[in-house]
Length: 177
Ligand code: IMP
Ligand code: MG
Image (spheres, rainbow, N blue to C red):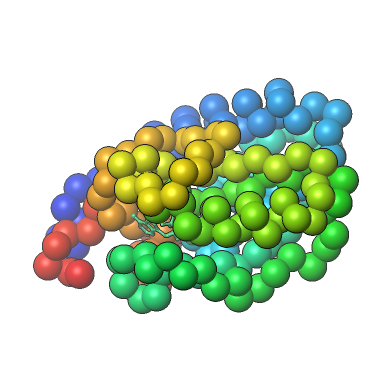
């Protein structure tokens, strides 16, 4: 795999992380009306693995398609909502499921949008967090792994729409960018 500079999280690291997060969410959302809001496309693999570790019957899922990166690896701060939710979230305990929190522009935009629709509660679960890259003050309530400010690919995350299908998280070698 010469296109990788390093493997950051192996499939086993990921499985352990997801189990831990699923356990926390299962504990915290007992008796609540949990609605997972998955942010497409990056969070799809994370969502699929995470929801299997949430041992609750009252758990629903909806999707929002949000794009901030336009092709390349620098987020410009402009967030486009390409597909909004189909349902009314009023009265739900909404948990946003995101692949990675970087500048914070995306989740800042999404949380402001969803807050105005009066959910019972609104929290954020991100698989990865790059706190050193933050541009707006926003934190996630559930974080899988804190990582340094490096551009990662795989496990749903892309570079120019490629590499989402890698089952682990890696750092793309500079000569491929
Ligand atoms: P933010 O708006 O800068 O916080 O970035 C959020 C979005 O940018 C995430 O949902 C990802 O889709 C994408 N993103 C941020 N960092 C990375 C990365 O290292 N690899 C791949 N995508 C990333
Ligand atoms: Mg994303």
